[in-house]
Length: 302
Image 1 (cartoon, one colour):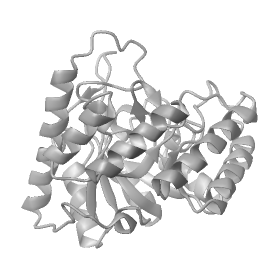
Image 2 (cartoon, helix red, strand yellow):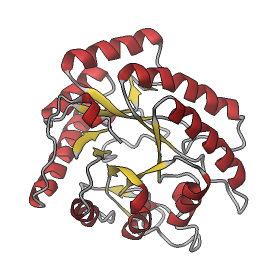
Image 3 (cartoon, one colour):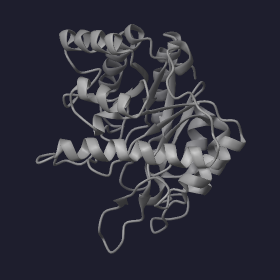
Image 4 (cartoon, one colour):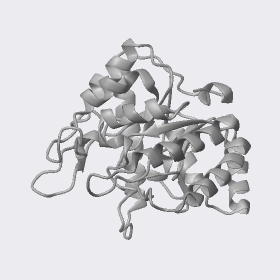
């Protein structure tokens, strides 16, 4: 097992993302945004600078948190939008030696009609393209079709060959369970328990149910309703040997529309504190992990 994280929650620039990663004693980043843009959208020149600095610092991109079919994408949009992102992502992942990419299943539609057959069709093609390029797509339970309930995730697994899963511990507490009704919050332990056989990767986030119309609240790992401790304990007992990636959201929520006024010094401190808290939890379970690996193939293995 190895530790990593969405270092764009610590800083926008890659140099400071690397600094935060090394401060935690890690050498892997789950890359998403650099200077405010997803890694498949930055210029070729900027991408080459990123590659050079990562190589120089001995830090790797173990997973790419792409925007492919994510919560901001509508299933009614032209499929070419998705395919273009896939086509831009593949050569960059190959250049980085990254073997795993986070994808989603498009935003949930309002109402009953979810166009699930179209989702399955598109994701089957997306998975095929990535797999042919030697890259493993992993679907995250988020504000998308598969994230509507564990039963919706099962539907994806049954209809999209070759897909594997990310489980995010902190997403369930603020999302409704659409298999039970619009007034029932998901239970993170139940969701995890029903899909764990398909999990290839873990996101550690923790949160509390929204109350009285107010948005969800994010907490340190183990202090919310994400069953973080219980899930980590179960993973340990099952000899899980994949990546565990922090995505704190405590200082910055990346799907928030208004990002003005962000205190990046505060974000950096929160990110490092969050990683240290995760380490504390793991040490309390006597879980041994690869704190700092120079083996690029190991940390990129799915």
